[in-house]
Length: 363
Image 1 (cartoon, one colour):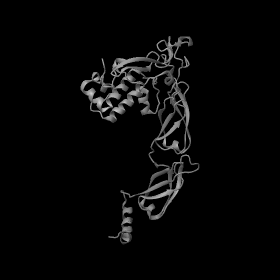
Image 2 (cartoon, rainbow, N blue to C red):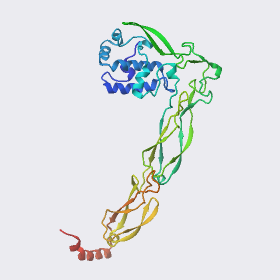
Image 3 (spheres, rainbow, N blue to C red):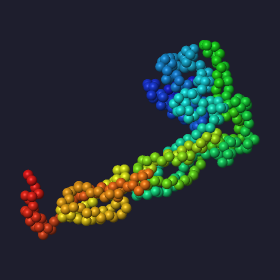
Image 4 (cartoon, rainbow, N blue to C red):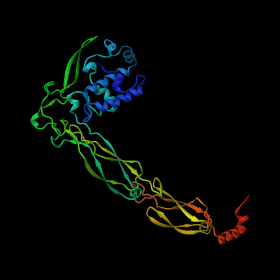
């Protein structure tokens, strides 16, 4: 029975071109034979065939009206292959047009060429104060690696590996299809060895014959001083192992910096607030201000108004990758007005008010 093309791609019948393309990308990544975890050559062919029809407005119209049978004889669908989903010489070409050739198509040559391992993204959280200086952190990774039991061969013993009898080691099989143009010879990936050209009599039990297995490891990473929240660091060669001698993938480490209850940050600059009494603000005052490097003296001038900002030079975060450079700290002065005056304090303020009324307030 032929599957519904829309169901294969996981889209509605009203899906537009962009939705079809996005759904195909997702399905092709998942089912491509090079995917060690979810690869399925048969499903890969089917979703490719479904997309090839639905992306073409004329073929899609025929399919919507008459189904897959209606495409036979229309030059758009051969009806051969696994359950009627053949007719495509190399679905890897379609895949490559979207992903830049990151996965190979059918055939022993393409299957066995060196390819880079998969990249992965990992997150780590550090405290606000950890960003003041270089900080060593340990992170745990779980990359795909060569199976240690079989050394990547996929077999319990080297003698269990032999030449595939279906394709005689070619990795490809050929078939003839009857079309309205006559017989057409089609080359496709060998269904028995999936293009490797090899047959494994006794698969490795540790990796189920894949030759690859996820391994947990811990590495130490230096987080540079001054790093910002959300910065991504590239850890070269720490991702999945490459195929057929290809280079390892990379790890992209996203660094999240926790917030602080006293300090706010904008790049390398720090912002904080300090409270002073109105007498200190009026007369001027020297006070101890918290900075990320400890207490530091700050002189406020007489007549300082509430929310006036003072700058402490180079009391901010290090400027990342700029040696001996630091940001500044901006201190917002908040003048506190008392609300529990004693009788004596109230009397003194009333006298003060009489003296200053006409000088401070302009109507």
